[in-house]
Amino acid sequence: MTTIFDASTACSDTAAKPARDVLKQRGQHEVFCGLTSIMWLHRKMQDAFFLIVGSRTCAHLMQSAAGVMIFAEPRFATAIIDERDLAGMADMNDELDKVVTRLLARRPEIKLLVLVGSCPSEVIKLDLPRAASRLNGEHSPACRVMAYSGSGIETTFTQGEDNFLAALVPDMPAEAADAPASLVVVGALGDVVEDQMMRVFDGLGVGPVRFLPSRSSTTLPPVGPNTRFILAQPWVGACAQALERRGAKRISAPFPLGEEGSTAWYRAIADSFGVPEAKFDAITAPGRERARRAVARYRPVLEGKSVFLFPDSQLEPSLARFLSREMDTSIVEVGTPYLNRDVVGAELALLPDTVRVSEGQDVERQIDRVHSDNPDLIICGMGLGNPFEAEGRSTKWSIEFVFTPLQGYEQAGDLAELIARPLMRRELLKVGS
Ligand code: SF4
Image (cartoon, rainbow, N blue to C red):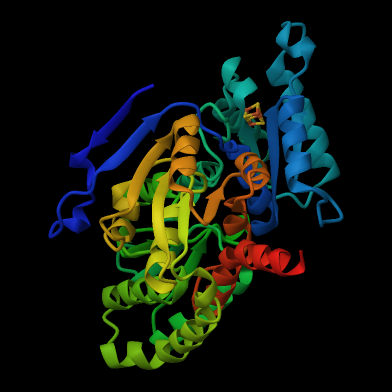
C-alpha cells in the first residue's frame, strides 16, 4: 500500500495560504457501489425505471438497502445474469431484449428506461450502451432507453448519480444562442428543498431556473451558451464536465449546507446574475436568521467536540466546513473518496490548516488513526459504524446525509441535529444508567 503526501495538491482557492498537505491512500476501501444511488434517483425522476443488469448479489443489495418501496409499482428491478447466460447457452442481448419488451408492455407509463451496469455485466463485457441504443430504436419515442454504469469496480456510492446525470446531458434540448441567461441547479435535491430554493430565486429575480435531474424525464432542462449551472451536490463532477462541453458556464461556490454555505451558494448565483447587494441582503436575511437560530440550539452539543469523517459520500468536506465554522467543532480528519479541487476547493479553503485531509482509503490505517486520535464522533459508512459503536464510540452513518433533505436555510437546523443526535443519545444513556 502506498501513502503519499502530496503538497502540490492544495486547491487553487488557497493561493494566499500555504499549500495544504493531502494524505493520499490507495488501499482497501469500504463504500457502497454506484447502484446505491438508484435508491434516491427512482424517487426523484418519477417516470423513469432503473433496470440493473446484474447478479443476485446486486438484487439483494438493492432490496435490503432500499427496503420497502413506497410505490404501488416498483421503479427499479434487477435483470439477473444467470448460469445459462454465463455459460453462453443463451444470447444475453436477446434475453435482455425479452425482459425489456415484457417490462414495457406491462408498464406503458415508463417514459425513460435506464439500463444500469454492474460488476458482473462489466466483467463479462456486456455492452449496455450499445444495447440501450438498439432498444431505444425499438421503443422510442414512447420510451427512451439509456445506460450508465453503477458497477462497484468503477464507482462508489454517489458516483452512480453522477454517471446517470452525465448520460442524460446529451439528451438535454439545445437552448437558442440568443436565449436569456438561465440557471440549472445540478444534483438531486428533495422536492421541498427545490421549492424553497425557487422562492429565493424568485425573490432575487433570477430565472429561469431548472433542476437536473428534473422530476420528469420529458422535461430535461435546455442547455446552451447562455446556460449557467451550479452544483448542489459535490459528486456530480462528470456531469459538470458534460454540461461544459455543451457550452454551459459553471458558477463555483461552496455547497448549500448550513447558513454560511447556503449564503455563499446563493451569493455566487446572485453575483453571476447581477443582483444588487441590497436586494440580496433583503431577500436572504430572514432565512439566514432562521438558520442561525436553528443551528444555535445544537451548538452546545457539538462545540469543542472532535470529529473524524471517513470517505464515503463526497459530502465530507462540506460537512467538515459546516461543523468547523458554524458549530465550533474540531475536525481531526476529513476523508473523501475523490478530491476534485474544482468542485470542493472552495470548501477546503474554509477549513483550518490543522485539519488532516485524506483522499481515497486504506481502511486499516484509517481505523488505526481513529484509535490514536480518539475522536468524540465518527462519521462513517454503515459497515464501520457498528464495530466502532461496539468499542464504545459515537458514530453517524454518512448515508443519512444523502437521504435527508439538508440543503438551504430551512434545513440547517436539521443538519446540526442529525450530527448532534448520537452525542445527545450517549448523554441520555449516561444519565439513565
Ligand atoms: Fe456488488 Fe458490484 Fe453488484 Fe454493487 S454492482 S452489488 S459491488 S456485484
